[in-house]
Length: 403
Image (cartoon, rainbow, N blue to C red; front, top):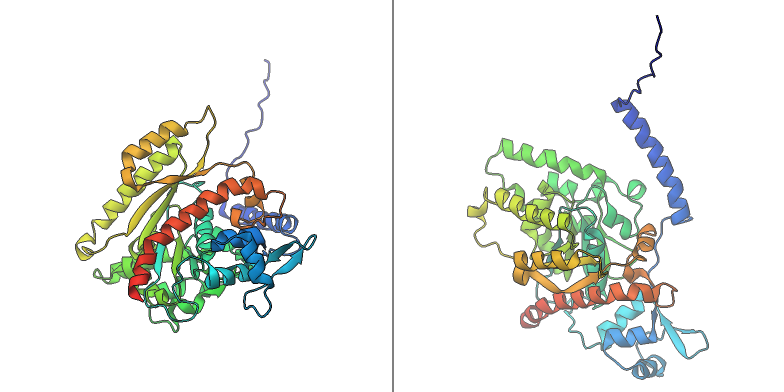
């Protein structure tokens, strides 16, 4: 009788302890990669600005900027002489000082403590991963700050990608007590949410960072509802952010790509919403699911929120591929039919160079004009700057009236 040999069966089972070991190895690997990406430490530096950029930000001629910068006894930052001596280089803080003092952009007076109107809360949300949600959040914050605004970003995603874009090494430099979580636990916490806001590398931009422990809110809030059916779990963040409106022109919130309890809180706290949407079929279907789920959940408390409304909801097409084989034209048609006036005319094009920026935890606004990549990034930066201008214009008149 002939014996046939059998190949050993591959055991693919994975225990929880093996997952823990795997996670530890991954952590070590990412730590080594960080050293290569952001050696020696994950510290970000703001961009510098040329005379031409200062002129563009302020709505002035380049010659006028040179005159004001070199005028004897002038109070404007003079920058540093650069290259052959015919051009100057300005820091981000100096650029914002120019915008505040001489630009044609209406200033709220927050910097001098004279603003009367309330700051606005912007939510950037989408269920689909890869929709540029987090980078859009950071770009909105940076772009609005370049218009002279004081901005706070709040990271509600336990993955903490926005915190990383703000220059924080989230795994090592952020602890649970520095996030929104203590306020979720105790709305009477000393100092409120303002006490956990911290400055960033970017002048005029503060952050309340995220931590993996934010997942705990998804257990705490339903537990509170179980104890007290009348507990308004959806309004905690709105209540906490109300005092911060006096300290910031804009509060930009980035959420996890899911309709979590924290995301629902952000939806109910926001004055306006931006949804970045990649014009691809799966992204479009995912966006439709977002509104369906939000509507279903909102039915539970809609009667108590009859006055809730958004100043605007804007769908921003992002990573748009204009190639001849792209599906963008077809999906754009679907989006136009579905969203109507919510679809913004500004589009952010796809760019192969953006992947390099992502590896360096950077956005298109982080790149100085003197960089070799500046021109490649400019085609993405310009529509984002225009979109920031559009958002700002929605609220300027309100602030003017409140003065």
